[in-house]
Amino acid sequence: MQLARVIGDVIATRKDESLTGIKLLVVQPLSVNREPSGRPIVAVDAVGAGVGEEVFVVRGKEASFPFHPVEPPVDAGIVGIVDHWGMQESSASWTTGISRSLAACPTN
Image (cartoon, one colour):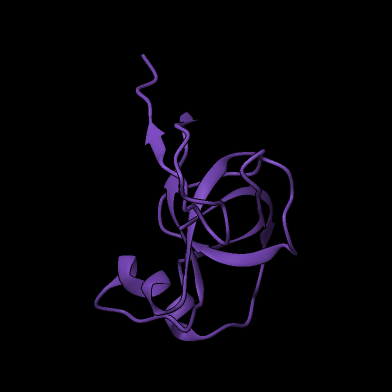
């Protein structure tokens, strides 16, 4: 999974039938410091995310799993909206995605 921020939406009047009813959003991958990292990508939204929210994105075939039994032709999908997160130092290094120990913290 990779942390990203939703920066826009995509309107596509012509698309594969299996994408009908699925929202497409533009997401900007983020570094561990929440800075833009790499180029923005288009991802399908499985959780109802909106512009400005931080989200978790999966890539590859797994991006279509939330839409089972339909298998839309996608390679990036939003699978979580981040309410809050904190980091604990570990010996793991930050590479692609999230490889440091991230602990989700309750919001209350």
